[in-house]
Amino acid sequence: MRNAQRPASAQEAVATAQLRCRTQDHQLHSFISLSPTALDEAKALDAEGARGRPLFGLALGVKDLLDTAGLRTTCGSAAFRDHVPEKDDVLVARAKAAGAVIIGKTNTPEFGFGALCANAICPSTANPYDLSLSSGGSSGGSAAAVAAGLVPAAIGTDFGGSVRTPAAFCGVVGLRPTAGLLPSPTRAIAWDSLPTAGLLTRDAAAAGRLLDALAGPDARDPMSWRAASSAPAALTRIAVSRDLGVAPVARDVRMRFDEAAAALSAGSCGLVEDHPDCAGAMAAFATLRAGHIHHNLSPLARKHGDKLAATVRWNIARGEGLAASAFLAAEAERSALFRRFVAFFERHDVLVTPAAAVMPFGVNSGEVTEIDGRPLESLIDYLAITAIITLTGCPALSLPYWPQGDRLPIGIQLIAAPGRDHDLLAFASALERRQGFGFRPPAAFRENFP
Image (cartoon, rainbow, N blue to C red):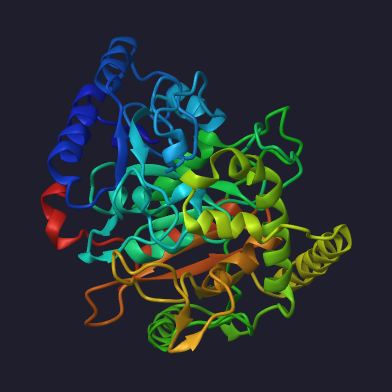
């Protein structure tokens, strides 16, 4: 974080965030828990000074799936209603070391599974632009808190699109970095790169500063690595795709995306319609996701089955009896898809798609089971436009675009080759300076943006 963007006082920044959470979050339900020690931590920071702390005084929300020492971490589950970890997740520890102060834990569906950010502990998180609509799942609490100005940034998690979808719904930047750039040394399967932490901010530059503070290898995570420190290279060869050839995308999203693509084309060279062959990708994702979830959560189902939401039980059951041959066939399909994306990025610098297949729906609507009146085969099919990108490990960023006359934004998903995270962020920053792109304060929370 550049010096000019540091708060003069960590206490002032934290006190402001706390006041907004106490007086405004009853409209959103973006936080499950607030930290009782945040102001004391801010006072200690002010006493020590900002030297060497790039996130000095940053009031940060953390999705309630990541452990926070001494602060309740529920995973959105009644089974963990009173769980207080002894240690911080590595990303939380790095954020604190860089000078951030954890304001609280943001809302999530139970264990991050669900289209709505609701659980047995906290009501469904509302969309700051229209409180009757959803913030999306599963990092909807993080996205809503940032969009409403309760906090300037938040950490989320992304498996099939859980950062990108809420970012699209709530009009903020949502970054899923290259797989392994943000380490996860405590995951049960060390070589699993499908889920990752992600970042929610109001602009791409802020996401880059937060990424720089949190990224880097951890010896306990064999998938983790360090990003190159070279200056960002320009991304000029742009490809666009409404649906990757296979993803269900609603008509109203396609219409708005076409407008965004036209706005892109007006100021860009080399824009073409193209995408890699993604046939079979979603079936592979569903198989791999089912296997990992069943392995990781079936012990919880045996112990706390009566306390788990129906969506969680459905997700766990999907992996019951999965054959090793089917799982490895899905891994082989994933490998082939990855290589097709690598070849694609030899011809193009950026692939642009919608960041969500549907527009925001009712805050208590339930799971997405159909698009444009056509039933979906499973509860995760509406995530195909983002889940397919998850398989590749490519960095992907949801950037707000405001169609003319609309009161709600859409998200456009910007995708680049693995490792080009900073190039992608620089490209997004350039787009934010164009008409129609970037964050706009919600009317109901405009007082938070003087």
